Image (cartoon, rainbow, N blue to C red; front, side, top):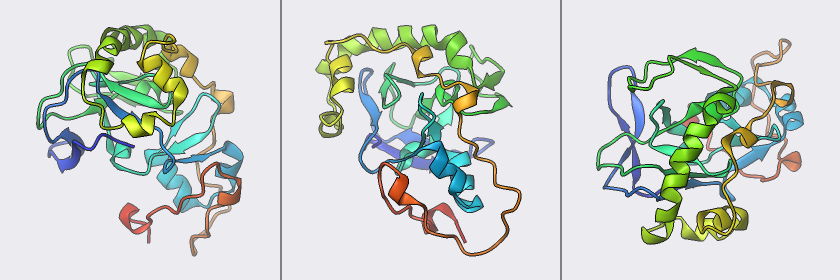
Length: 232
């Protein structure tokens, strides 16, 4: 679940749709936490999905260290990348603001730890832009992200946390946020290419009706809002 003081806006240019803060948000605020509405599919389930569903996952999902495909149910899926992201991960199920976010500022995240099998040129415009984003960036730059997280974790208790009820259902994450255990290093969130799910459509797939997803084998059985995702 994403922070309630974020909204989706068209900021124009090459960026288009983006998450922006509707009011000032202080550093140390948890901006996203994995919740019961998020859909988690293992790679065997993904392999059975028809092309329209794989296209949704290819566009919006990220991959856990175990190779599970995670589709966020709310605005979180629209976060754009920046090499100077305002959000960084505390484990794979929580993201925290590593600096103050001004009202109207874009809320960016780091695609280098999404475990996606991609390599794309980056034009985020940050002074520290890496120019290219790769699947294994967490192995090379994770220590930098970890330092940023470590600096703001002590702020967690002193700022408003609208997602506190969601975090209460994630005791391991809460232990890290409240200082009872150290945060996992970013490199521990890495999923090797051999375990990544295949999100490419099967070659034999053709047009037709979209079958129901095989939710009986997914961890959470939640109906996806197909109209809102422009599925015809």
